Amino acid sequence: MSIGSLGKSGTCFNNWSKTYYYTPELYFEPKTTEEIKQILCYASEKGKKVKTVGCGHSFSDLACTTDFMISMARYNRVLKIDKEKLQVTVQGGCLIKDLNEVILPENGMAFSTQGTVSSLTAAGVISTGTHGSGANFSNISASVVDLELMLSSGEIIKVSNTENAELLPVVSLSLGSVGVILSITFQCERAFNLHWKQYPDTLGNLHQQVSLIHQHQLQVPLVNQSHAQVPLAHKLHLKSY
Ligand SMILES: Cc1cc2nc3c(=O)[nH]c(=O)nc-3n(C[C@H](O)[C@H](O)[C@H](O)COP(=O)(O)OP(=O)(O)OC[C@H]3O[C@@H](n4cnc5c(N)ncnc54)[C@H](O)[C@@H]3O)c2cc1C
Image 1 (cartoon, rainbow, N blue to C red):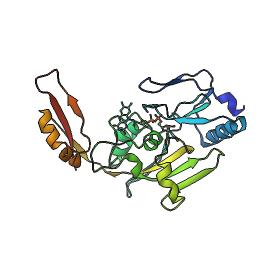
Image 2 (tube, protein in one colour; image 1 turned 135 degrees about the vertical axis):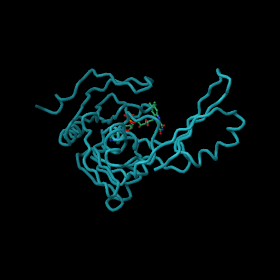
Image 3 (cartoon, rainbow, N blue to C red; image 1 turned 30 degrees about the vertical axis):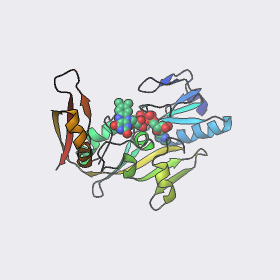
Image 4 (spheres, rainbow, N blue to C red; image 1 turned 180 degrees about the vertical axis):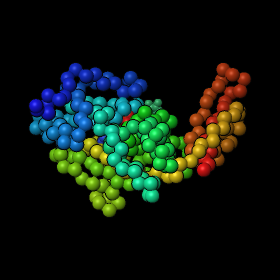
């Protein structure tokens, strides 16, 4: 069976916010590295562009294409857990939700930072530099220790501080433009608790305190409650072990 026949035509893709709709000529859901390689080689042969998609949560049309689309939904395994180094290695399509809710807590580990939702893939979050809101926390791309990238030729390169080191910052936040990210090792930290504090406050007070709050907190969602008596509430997440 040719790899082309594994691709579906007529699959309509839309991003989470339903602001972009695209129908790729062929839509693939590979499970193996060999299948991904064959798709890329087939695309080169046919002169087609390839876009890789995770959960499609990007608000932009970054993952959209009318040529070939590769979904990472089935390429989602956890490959290695290193409890001593507090590192986890996963395939690009591994869900952050699965890591947060099962894999990391079971191993006494946690991500140092992340966005507000977790139905996102490992490769998706690093590709867009997903971040929280505390001023002293880096984005999730900064926690990439190493990764494997498949180029359009099907060649696989390893990228880390010691191999192809100049590519590490590029591939760790590449907007899906440099190849298919096959696997990623994340630096995690020891599991911690989050204390969620929520209280109403005035806009004036908030303006005075906002930079101080951002210095010390992991996530600071601000909820406008203009319909209620109190105009504003903040939620603070304080870290403890
Ligand atoms: C409700 C909601 C809340 C959000 N909150 C936050 C937040 O708090 N902070 C924040 O920073 N962002 C936030 N985001 C944005 C979100 O974190 C990013 O858009 C993230 O990239 C989505 O991950 P995804 O798996 O859906 O990736 P997709 O949207 O599917 O893809 C994003 C990019 O990654 C590329 N990509 C995906 N997989 C691969 C791969 N294997 N190899 C190479 N490239 C790949 C795609 O081509 C595309 O360029 C939010 C989004 C939503 C919908």
